[in-house]
Length: 213
Image (tube, rainbow, N blue to C red; front, side):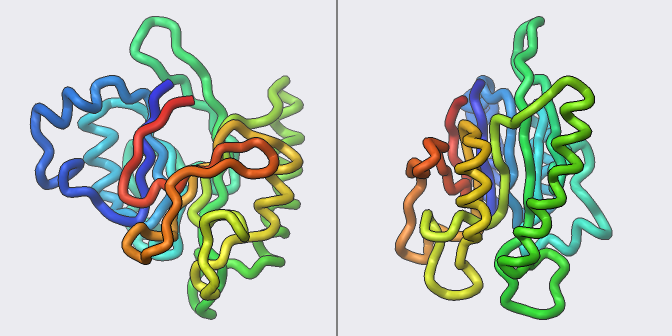
């Protein structure tokens, strides 16, 4: 399954400069994952042009989604969503768990959390896991967040510090992939891909990146 990962910065080639070459180059994409801080119109454009599922979480600058959420896209924040992907008659199902927001560095944002608040959000996912087990389903394939894990792709300033509770969460559940954003390439120190001690592949989606699972 081929994925287009996006976050933080709207790419001109995926929006203003879209053309038939872009469409051909992305014709094999099965799923789009947005790790936050993107214009809702950008997400709507991509889900329309590529005609594949787009799953997103909110970044710490996505308060405008309260007024105009991206239509035609799937909000995974605080949920496990299962999407059927693929170009053929037989679709492959993939399960994505989302946790939006960043480390709190201001007092007035609904999309920022202290370490304790994010740990509380994770603890309350037990209700989600129980509901899924009652449906005969368990686990998830991808963790989709806006912020990184602490110590893996984050920075030292409080605004871009990752969450320690994400490390524990990955160690417990060991999904195949953790997609995040928030730390931009233009900040200088930037690692696109790395492997977490749990074995999960970590990918910073800032801008755009193509991968497969």
